[in-house]
Amino acid sequence: MSNTSDKHLHIVSFDIPYPANYGGVIDVFFRIKALSERGVKIHLHCFEYGREHSEYLESFCYSVNYYKRKTKLSRIFSPLPYIVCSRDSEELLDNLKKDDYPILLEGLHCCKLLTCDELKDRNIIVRAHNVEHDYYEHLAKVEVDSKKKLYLKQEVDKLRNFECVLNKANAILAISQKDYEYFSERYKNVYKVTAYNAYTEVDIIEGSSDYVLYHGNLSVAENYRAAEILVETFENFDVKLKIAGMNPPPHIVKLIEDIPNIELIDSPSDQVLFDLIRHAHINILVTEQATGLKLKLLNTLFNGRFCLVNDKMVEGLDVNGLCYIVNDSNAIRFAVSELMPRSFDKHQIERRRNNMKNFYNIEEATDLLLKLIE
Image (tube, rainbow, N blue to C red; front, side, top):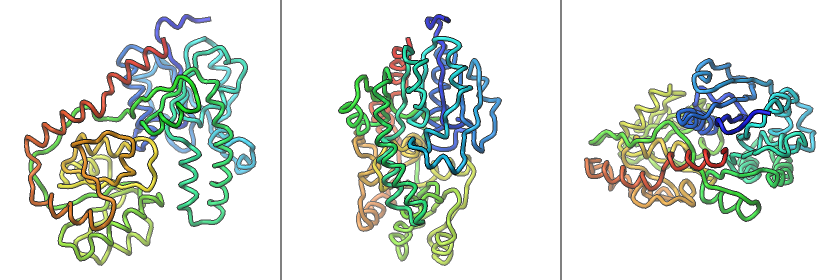
């Protein structure tokens, strides 16, 4: 068997983590990048189901392997959660058995491997991206399609029952304080490791602009419902609102098209969205579900000016001096009216920079990972 002292690590990812263009894979990709830069030889294993193979990943990884996700509809009848049983691979298990390097499993999605006797003596770490049954329970509540709602409710029970497999992990990496408290009450060796993302330095444009921005994947019910509330909030309010996001549903398009101070930006490129965030006078970030650490919050705090959030967006986070908390339409309008005349000046930028050092420290997170894999 191979020796682990030369810092080899298997990472099993639920999806191909590049391009890093949505929450979960952003965390995976920039963790790979950070570990690679610290000298870890990464053996990446990706489940594929629609995203292209990426040669770029090979510049950070010692090896990259791909496995077809088993997406047949019949798998929804498995006693295992669909996100788990669709990522069951004998080929992956065979590859992991070729050495004794530590293994990092990205998400409960990949944790079928914890049930394999052949790996029972390995150092296996699990990155918990969410408390998955809570996440699915929320999805079920907001889903309007009856068949999808039934599927999601069944997954809630399966995920809750399967989660005890985490007892077999050597360590669990929670993504937020709230998740850390949940997992540490139930399992041993739980650590809080913040979400990795593209930005580690505050880079904000001094000054002001004439619009407020809300952005999110508008094909997701939670996000388009937030957009609906913001449209109602800003209609007949003398401030420009831009709503940007992927695949807005037709009713959102129709809702916005005749309101002169509200603009819909349909499926912007990464660069366009980045520019919108940086040039907005105020970014509004709201969520109905307090899960994990929202990567769009990190991106906004590193690159955007004033930031309005609701309490669920920052639940369990120490955001003193970073955000303004607004939980209803009246509070949003009041805060916007107060902030629009104010410039985001050098003092505001320096304050953000100082507060972000306490809020987000990726070097500490990587130091902890290195200790756990050694």
